[in-house]
Image (tube, rainbow, N blue to C red):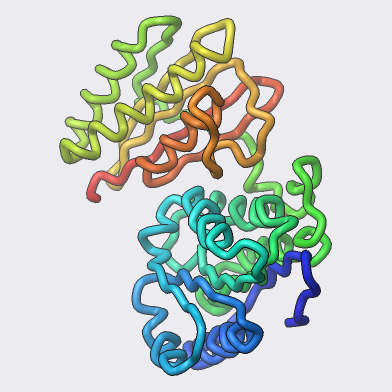
Length: 305
């Protein structure tokens, strides 16, 4: 990849076809940064960093590793981690390797991880950052690879704004969420959130969630429902259902969220984005779609932690 000039974000994709190619390319990318005095953050799925860490063991400079399987379970948690790393190195260019999509991720996780890749172009538009995102070419669907090519185009990386970040986002990642299934239990609410909390708790216990994860899901649903009351003139509707793998809570109201990074970066306690931030910290996946018809937030919690 071309070496960026100062003040310009570089956000490139690496389409690899073998593990040796993967390890060699990432190690070379990190070494090139270390030679320039650039610290590196490497976040890869569990076990994939071992060979790279061994290769870089004697390289001078700062290299930090993290597990994408855990951090990126909810892709909305990735940008805050990278921002924290860049903030620790003010005035200094940094390198980041992140693999947010790997074989086995669900369709919903892939959509949100692809949205994450597009939002990277906005969140770090003016950052001193060189970013490389590996993609398993043989293991991922052609549609996923096509999405990666769209989100990693250089014009998007170097000049994305709140108005343009969607230009390179695949349409399927920005469509309204489908309706809840017929078996979902629905509840309309206006000012009293106690019935919302009871509904979510009852379903969470029925689905076998642990006590801690039940509390987290109730908190998340309460936060989104409280946003309805605080930021709209009408009430909202919550649907709750569960599958063999997870329990889902979906809330729809008439409000509109215009900040594309709401919930992806930390906001003040009085901002609507603060509640979304908390929800992303406790849920395994959060899907948000907002437009003229209002906002829909779908919260996922795996039945096994």
